[in-house]
Image (cartoon, rainbow, N blue to C red; front, side):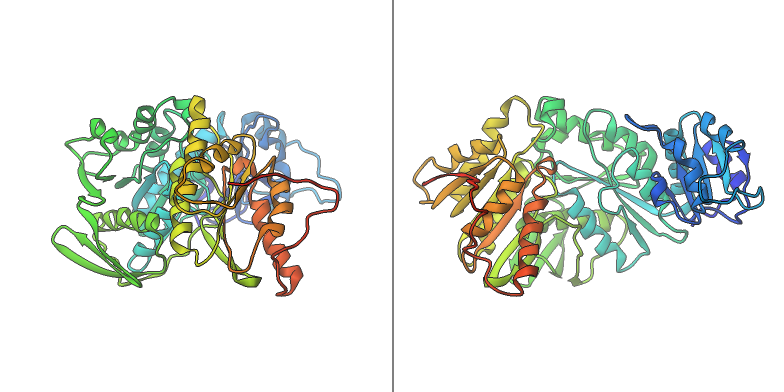
Length: 490
């Protein structure tokens, strides 16, 4: 609960208080969707491209919201509002608080910044081209063993989501782990100003959002806004092997590096146990994961934890966020790797490395378009296809018009004799085709940009498992009359 009364909350948000409401204490959380408003919530009505959330303030109050924070025209209309259909009118003593602000988003961000300081928690902000969510999940597990820790849920990492994540942290929180997303210049700077982190982590710099930013150097500059926004004396955690970040380093920050020659590095990697070096110290760990890219993310998390004075415990159990490499065992000993939350060239390579290292039999990759890569998008897709072939992928299903270029790379060279490639136009076609291609003991990676919707493929396989009742999934026939792909032998 945000333990401010209405007068204090209005003062902090720099909002005008039209009605104090009847609720004692502060709101339980902030929400921006009136359909999610519950008793005790603060509903913040944000204007959108198609609708203005402030127009639904009355519905939020009717649902029992602690109060609403909306633009003045919506706040002032509430006093004269007619009762909703099939509802009783509000009595003055029963209705929630009404606060007005000319820009409710600015008010939400101002509240989050104030609550961050009220908590007194140590704040870690994490960004990167790929792996930031997994690094957040790992760091939350490391810190959670010693401190009362709250981490950004799911993808609350934007100018709207991050304030909601901060405001969801209860009193008594000792560590707050926040994820910062970026779509263009200035956005990391805005999020850093809200979070004011004690520790900033840049996991990596890679080819993402090139359609907007134009170059890797511009991506690095956007990520480095986190460094620029840190207070003097704060700690920044950087990959040791990323020269693109060197121009943005600051002498007044404590810098910790991770990677092969970094301050935090992987000394040994044996089945079930790894040893991490931190300076001259050796830390033995038994993490619940073994993927090489997540072990590198672990190094970044250990560096951030040590900046807060926390050393990870030997046994490290991490619950990763959904759609980020989740493994499901299906009938016929088929393993589904559901990694379809998003994709870029770096994360595709990491996922293919994991597929190659972990598959006991055939390696099947269902790969979708990687979006927002700019003028070099076909080259990046061809390179992913070459990578898949070099890593021994047996069967590639390329989903979408851009992913079709993966076939050119997949079919080049003589490093591995692949069984073939299937090109399909969309996720629905892939979902219909895939069960007809599978064999017992296959390992299937499903990955693509979120806009491709490959979660439909993963859900289809899981639904097949439920319907089959443990009967074989492999060799299912496609829908009669449908030709979902054009197959090319490699």
